[in-house]
Image (tube, rainbow, N blue to C red):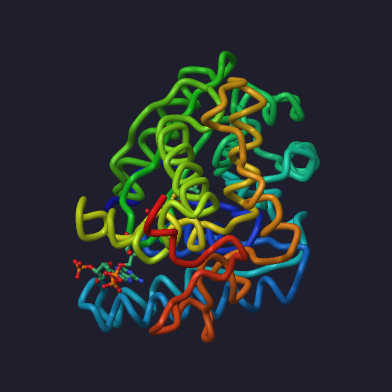
Length: 312
Ligand code: 3HC
């Protein structure tokens, strides 16, 4: 990865799972990285997540100790958004909530002082033009969508809007492909872009299958892991993404396309209302005693689970 790209300073807004992963990736690429969150507890958790991930990368032989120390020295955490004033690029990575993202874009527009500063959103589904319209420089806004876990999955989706200018577009492409070393795919500005427009209907179908008693959770997941060589089954992947995020993406897709395959199943809505948000909450389709570690005997947690009737 090279640092010859003109983007030398990045601000990541939001220090959740995605924000901290993106920050780690930028810091590993030698870019001066500032991570903002309004919540200092979220910053502390994100900081610990980055530290653990860097140690894991060293243990797995993906980074040398020196590279890991250099990356750690490149990341700084703050609760003060005004510190983004000098950034070449801001990447928004707050929860999948349109109002929250619009408010953040509007604030970034006021704070960022460089006339050529770029703004990107890591939204999973919200059309980028909607977010860009909260700024006075929509021509400098691009979609930049990463995948969880960010340091491991090497894809990024790049999404131009009807207003993105050519220079901004080429700078973002260069940043994603050359500075971060990601494989770039390009999507039109449609809800869900390429990956989530394909992935979410599959996850929703697995929830409907589980909800109807067609099969138990473990069998649905084993079917796709052992039968199709997916690294995770769809219900465990939904737990990994977060049920609240999955629901928000499905609602956004449904709003845009009005297709039944994007309509969230009732069980997904009920589980979100119950706080069964997946791995981060300790409970989703499986129980997680330690954050991130499913129980050895993972069992369906939803009331409609259980063995399907053999005779029907
Ligand atoms: N830094 C660098 N590399 C790391 C790392 C780190 N912190 N942690 C792990 N790795 C590497 C390991 O070295 C290993 O590489 P190798 O195969 O070359 O040795 C590889 O990553 C896998 O690591 P692990 O062995 O620890 O983990 P698992 O084999 O258990 O895999 C997983 C874990 C990567 C999460 C895998 O289960 C997976 O890919 N699951 C699917 C995840 C997925 O689909 N994500 C996309 C979700 S959709 C999304 O994010 C979009 C959003 O909008 C919703």
